Image (tube, rainbow, N blue to C red; front, side, top):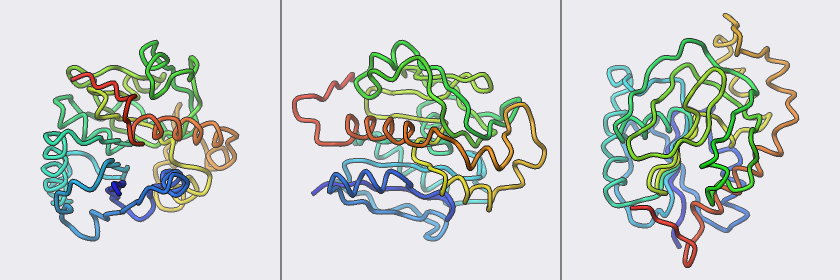
Length: 241
């Protein structure tokens, strides 16, 4: 049975609700710790879905994290074999980079539960249909990506103009974290709390990060995306390539 390969970069940013979704759908989930192995997994046809998670490093931090080179090469091969890939935060930045977009530091950090505005394309897309005009989601990033060529823009926020994209219905990149609940947010504040110290217009205090009422809606949206993107797609696969 085909399953999910999840590329994880640090101990405190795991699959979160993605693991819950996989268990409910009886879909095998294999986690590959890039920071522990220091190399990418072998190419395989058994993984229907590849998830690239977040992390505190940047796309171009290859001198500090040499495994980033291997990860990029691995993901480029998966693009060529037409795998379906979901990139989250750092993962979305890596995929945008591989697809030809610029990844750069933003003017301001965005950390906390802030709204994203969905585009009309996102609201009509099968992966997000019925989402409404905006959703309050969890952010934790300072870097941002441009829109890759041939990609559809999904969302934006006041702090970050590019919050998500779909490329040929085979790659989805999300700058924000639908997979994280309050437990995952608590881990981030424990391990990356220094990011909060400087504050900013779009940096919430720890208490606000850990008391959001938006977790249930975020998880429901994640499940909708995963159902449309990763489940067997016989008869409802709208490839655009």
